[in-house]
Figure 1: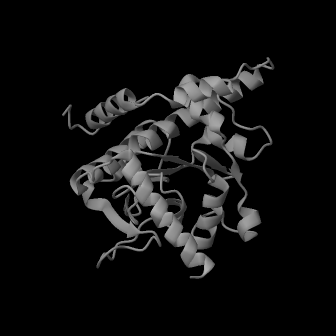
Figure 2: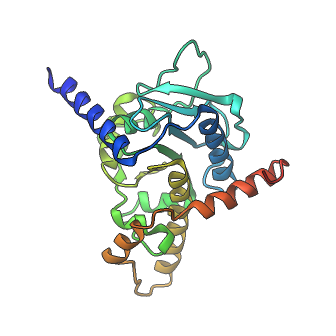
Length: 265
């Protein structure tokens, strides 16, 4: 068994172990599609994405497939727009529609992170400054305590030289996934960010609160005063909360439905 096949085998085993430990039951395809649509609308309403950006969800714990929209502005995504791709980011079955050019972000992260169930890519302006300076993002707010786990910066020049800044090849996707490592998010120099979660709720909420953290941190630094960041103990305590974002998801979902004229469900 060569090194590549051995690594794939180990990752598959790790994915199965994660699934067993989570005790997760497979959610219906219809529910997953609804969640992806909802996530797109929430991220658009919260101004984390605009015409660009995307969100995906793995079809099941440890699965080698994920759901993502066809190439479309997030606010316009409907259930009919959702595609199923494999970890090579190729459509499953006879699907002819095209997903996003940067779909390799999703496939390559899922390939090496069996714990990840959802991936978000965004261009939130508040995050750009921290990707082009030497000022690291640090946790300033309890809902963004995950920042304390580390948010590295992906330098695409190191992976591909001069590019159009888009992660539109498997090689660039793998390089980005390597920079992300085990962290909850990664900044992309001059581009945006990628955020992951063990559920689509966590990935979406982290995306919202990562932007809040960046905005507040920048405001405080501009004041020229000493900043009191969350410490390691506080970050650890916050990470032990079993459902830190459920209430936020339900509110944002309600607001997204109202904005689309669907009313509350």
